[in-house]
Amino acid sequence: MASFLKSAASAGSAAYDSFRRLPGRKFEPAETDQLVLDLQAALTEDRVRNDSAQRALMSHDASVFDGGNAGPVCYPETTDEVVAIMKIAERHDRAVVPRGAGTGLAGGAIPLGDAPVVIAVTKMNRVLEIDEDNGIAWVEPGVINLDLTNHLKPHGYHFAPDPSSQQVCTIGGNVANNSGGPHCLAYGVTNAHIMALEVVSPAGDVLQLGGLDPEPLGLDLRGVFVGSEGTLGVTTKVAVKLTRNRPGVRTLLLSFSSVRDAANTVSGVIAAGVVPAAMEVMDARITEAVENYVHAGYPTDAAAVLLAEVDGLESGVDIDADQIRAIGLANNATDVRLAADDTERALLWKGRKTAFGAIAQIAPDYYLHDTVVPRSALADVLEEVYAIADRNDLLIMNVFHAGDGNLHPLIIFDGRDPGVLDRVHQAGAEIITASLDAGGVLSGEHGIGVEKQKFMSRMFTDDDLDHQNRVRQAFDPVCRANPGKVMPMGHSCADIQQLRAVPRDVWG
Image (cartoon, rainbow, N blue to C red; front, side, top):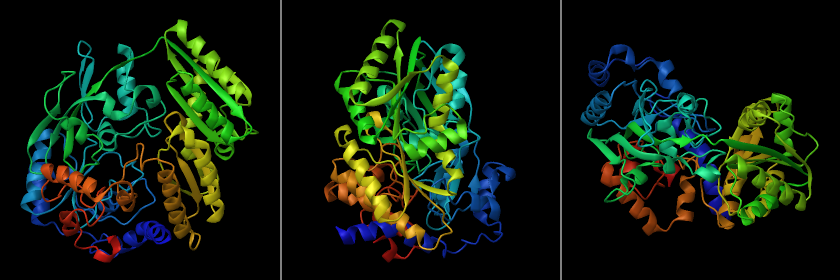
């Protein structure tokens, strides 16, 4: 186990040190080769960028990982243009990497290998149709998550998945990572809110996966594509479900003198048969940072706070809120506060959703994980997370989707400190291992990307991985779409070939 942890912990820094040595990594001004000329002819010259600044920008995402190697960056506006890009890239034997807003935290949008063509869908940002009869809206992948909800609000609907990055993340990115959010406890993650997809395969074929029939015939290829992290093709249109706004909403803030009491309250609420729209826990360190940043009225003397929200008919939400209050008090809650109005409710949620930004007042960098553990194991795993921080001489803050056991431990650090990245990666590996040992899984919403590849072999058998690779190769026989992601090296020969510029001993 110790050698496995050491290997997994060092995978990130070793691999990315290697990427920094790749040809073109310094991003000198590139010559205009035939690939770029062909792409510009298919789009327009201003929507195919090959300058060093743009390529450098597109060579990383919001994760702590760095060192990608972007080739030409394309900004298509139509499905036909995506088709053209795919066919041109295939003709030039070049991989492609789909990209939304770049807010991913697992390295999923980092272009690996020999300067892949980056397909940035941010200009495909139209809401095409709102079909209230069928309860869906057709949108393009570059639509911002929160913009979609604001667009639907006058109709009395919203898009239920609400990641903390919803002000900037795109629907296409949500599809790629099967994103969640605080309100997915009751409503489900992205996969539960996608009826159909129009996608372009790596060969340039336009496919529709799924449909508006609630019980479509055949294989659920829509479900296979959602969460595939850009490895099966490029999303060009999405039929999202409309979720009707509930008439009654109650938001509670419960304070506790221990994180364990907060975690036990979460388990008690679910055991009592109450399924809130959201249940979020923040520990003392992150609560203090949030309060200093937002001034939302969070208590700074509590060891943990639980933000719980119920929605539905007015006649029922007060009953559920009272039950949550009673369960919290039975688990030693020191204070229970009910948001007085929509203004206070919005401020409480603003604090929760800006938690990651709030840590900038403490240190310039953070590494965020998102393993999932059984609710019954929450308290024990959280105690182990704090112990991991102490062993590695690091500061860890915890803020997480408590209702479904989706942990978000934030490792806070200053990347300029000598040796700190080694300790950060070691702690990250130990957190993943502790979560898996507790019966958990690798990711709740951020995806596997490159961050958790080494751990796929610990969670899945070789047969499992072989079948996953067969599914991928059914869509993309030579792994030209977002190569080097999700599947661990050694389980996809095509991936290793795509990453021929990276030393084989880095990936193992």
